[in-house]
Length: 69
Image (cartoon, rainbow, N blue to C red; front, side, top):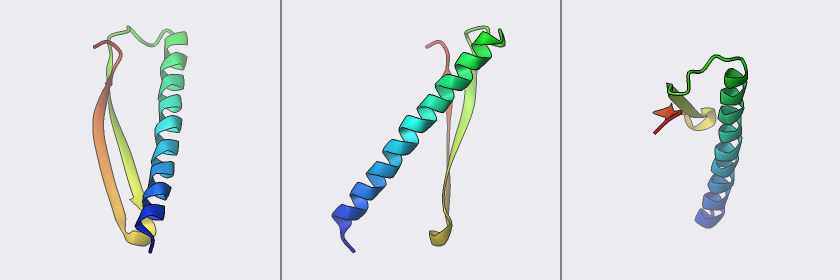
């Protein structure tokens, strides 16, 4: 195993997840806003699940997305 190659591969995967999940969240908020379904002060609980079936790994990450700080 090459630790450097593993690290680079993990970083590429996480960058992909970060960019695409950010776009999906922004798109969902924009669509809800267009429909008039948001007051503008909401806070949304969020959960991200990481699964690696072949390594029997399942990890959940919980957080919140606030529309106003």
